[in-house]
Image 1 (tube, rainbow, N blue to C red):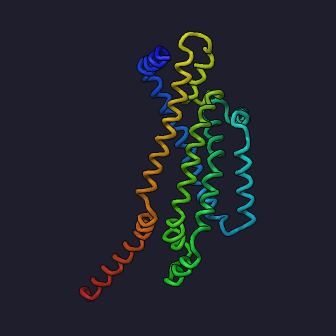
Image 2 (spheres, helix red, strand yellow; image 1 turned 180 degrees about the horizontal axis):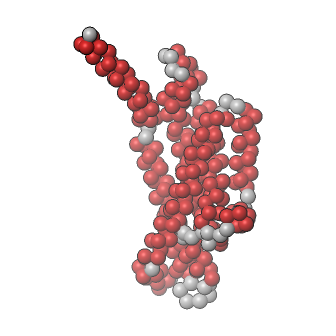
Image 3 (cartoon, rainbow, N blue to C red; image 1 turned 180 degrees about the vertical axis):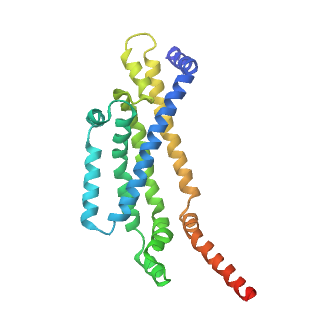
Amino acid sequence: MLNSIESWFEYMQDDSEDLWQLTIEHALLVIQATGAAVVVAVLLGIVVQNRPTARNIALSITSVFLTLPSLALFTLFIPLLGIGRRPVLVALFMYALLPVLRNTVTGLDSVDPAVEESAKGMGMNPMRRLFQVKLPLAWPVIIAGIRVATLLTTGIAAIGTLVSGGGLGDAIKDGFNRLGLPNSYEPLWAGTVLVVVLALVFDLLLALTRKVLSPGVIATVAEAPDRLLARRHRQQSDQEPSNA
């Protein structure tokens, strides 16, 4: 047992450059696919939140995406996109949609109607209510969905190696291909452990983001353009009497 652990650490040290490169490839796959899914799912969630039929259709379609076997999904895109990163990116994008969409809708639903009525009473138009009240209050629920989507895509991205998608799945596949031969378990375990570590790093960064970008901070940022406009109007008003 000790010899196996020692051999694994030696492999990690000797192949550190290759493993680092695979880790970067894996991280980029997750960031690009999940980032695109977050943009689309949040916008879609905002659009369908108050439209029950469209909302049910959107949630049903994205739920179906999540039930598709990952290997089959990667393979289905090969005739259209070829092999490599592109089919993996599209498949990961589809898997990441549901957690973010569902949490966006749930987060917007959780906003107290009385708070929105108060904002309306203060003269806020629908866009200001959305960006300065509803989205900041829904943000904790939305980022919880982003964390789930990120963990999901980090694990599934390892299967992308079967369509030459790169990433840490290459190390795992290398171990499987040499199973039974000397040093076959080292790359297998190295790929598996690094996928888990990468998922934990992503989750930690998103948890820190959740703490830094509190609803109050987001609301303050969203109000910044209004404050700048108000300051500019005051400056213009102060200059007009002096020019006169």
